[in-house]
Image (cartoon, rainbow, N blue to C red; front, side):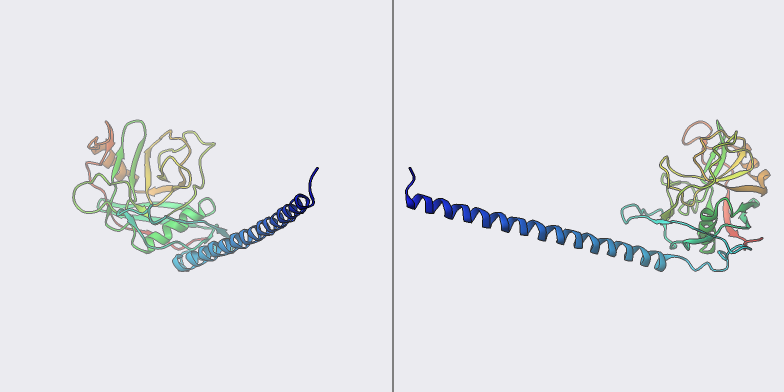
Length: 277
């Protein structure tokens, strides 16, 4: 049988336990509220930072990116590389405008040491990629660069567009350069065979999606690649020059029929015309 003192001690312990439980509940509620507010504040900072980044780094290519005849636009996402993702081969010329015309056509002119190569770009199929090229071309991004890869076995392509491939000779880093951003793929030829026929100009990328940058390849013979690469446009002039380069062969540095072109191709200047209706 318990004594009065023992009953008093038990009651005191019970009150203390209730007070501790109430304090713990209040603390949990306070932490939850702080977590929600904190998450909201972080989200606001991220959104604000993204808006500032796109506004501050986006180009002002107003003339080149004016809307087509019916004033139609596409919203494009150009993802800035992280500091760790940038290398000495990265050439930072800012981001293209996020709003791009999705009507009309443009003419790409690649002025090389062998002569001009031209291509027709349909904005309705590749508004974001065309906008990227227009931006990069306006910054002289491709000027005085060399086409660094020629494949003559299996597929038939000449690859160019690495801003770090300049000067005499070749380097192990050739083919790793690009702009300070990446974009999603467009206009994938999933229902076409061969996926990349002769005369196509398409975008190179890694095996991962959303890694399109500035490197492109000109297809000088039907090539059955997987349809994972943006078809940028169609060569309208100068394909014979590319075939001359292919006929001279590669140095097979990667494997037989895959290496640097023996006949050097230097892009003296790459330009994009104004949008035509």
